[in-house]
Amino acid sequence: MSATVAIVLAAGKGTRMRSELPKVLHQIAGWSLAEWSVNAALEAGADRCVVVVGHGRERVEGVLRERFGDRVTFALQEEQLGTGHAVRCAVEQRLQRFDGRVLVTYGDCPLIQGPTLAQLLASDAPCALLTTHRDDPTGYGRMVRKDGQIAAIVEHKDATPEQRAICEVNPGLYAFDGGFLQRALEQLDMNNAQGELYLTDLVAMAERVDDFVVPIDEVRGINDRRELAECGELMRRRIAERWASAGAAIEDLGAVYIGADCEVQPDARIDAGVHLRGKTRIESGAHVDVGCVLRDVHVSAGAYLHPYTVAAESQIGAKAQVGPFTHLRPKTNLGEGSKVGNFCETKKTNLGKGSKVNHLAYVGDGEIGEGVNIGAGVIFCNYDGVKKHTTTLEDGVFIGSDSQLVAPITVGQGAYVASGSTITRDVPADALALSRTKQENKEGYASRLRRRMEAAKKKA
Image (cartoon, rainbow, N blue to C red; front, side, top):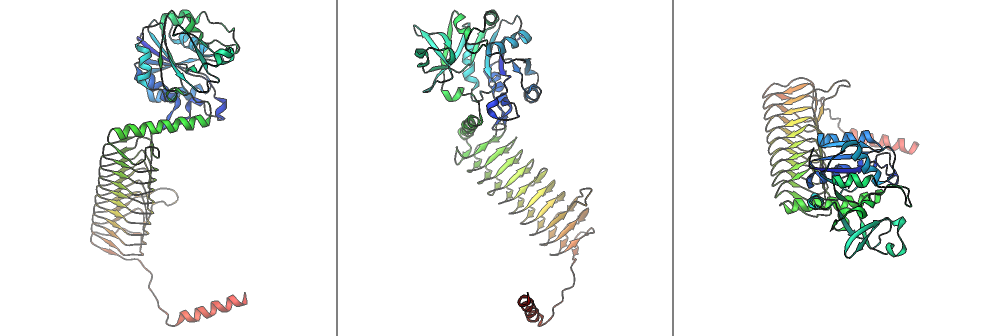
């Protein structure tokens, strides 16, 4: 059996969240609260995690298995009878006769960091814990010291007026010797104000307690949506600071959203209001301007995303330009030096090197070669009401403004489609395709038309 195990308590419903979603599955920066907590425990050195589940157990287990695989196992707490009961469930179901180091943390404590928890695991005391200070300690267990050493933790509801005046509080994160933990859990009882098994009672049973003081912001738990938003703000700032320290040019550390799975390379520039989600990657020298929202997008070196570009599941090539106000839908692949201009939309399209979709165009299900020019207002008519069809433009093609290309269709290399054309058949290489109705000019008709319209207006 492994020498170090983490128990993550994640069984509560979280009624104050006022949500059908289990509390520990609410997200911060793209990860659920439970994922942040488990990840910190593993970073601290735990070989595996036993997650105590209850409310919404199937959903919680599914999310954690997807990210952590067999490094997580689960124990069921059917009744909510306190933190001591939750840990007892984990020990009885998964850790019988385990005598290694046991870390205990919470599934709604996302800001705790691996190095902080590693201090607990490095201690050889029967019990090691974190402690912090609050100006208003209401609701927290109080640290009771004797001769400078922590002798007990008293829960708020059980505390005397003198103990309630103590501002050193218990954030609830511990490491125990496995043998001590199993013996001490057997001695717990419910003789307290809440009628629960208190994990805090183990502190008074330990011959020695090591404690480590941490800032309150790192050990904040989440009970409602307000606290979720506040912790989210702190986490996003932390992520932005990490990438900035690694060399990314981030204009405003407090005004960007960078998800936990994103990557921002040195010398990439991220302006205010940018949201990077999923597994977005921004390479060196790329510039993501104000207000862009990217999900699972790879932006190559030197590319420039003008303001308010929205993109998902797409590849943006080196030195490509996108936007402003452009939408790249999934499976868009922009080649080196290509351009998709303002108020354009693409979907499931490969755009070759140096090709341009200038403005006000829709390009869907397209295979576009190199050096192609697609004018303003061009529409790829890719859907016939049942199936999607592909439009292929070979190298060097020029598509004039306000043309409609009715797929499936191929425009051969170097061909020219005149503006205002509706193209329904393949165009050979080097050909000119022209599809317009004949223009007719009626001399002097405009003034007669105006008089007729004015008379109709007066009559009305």
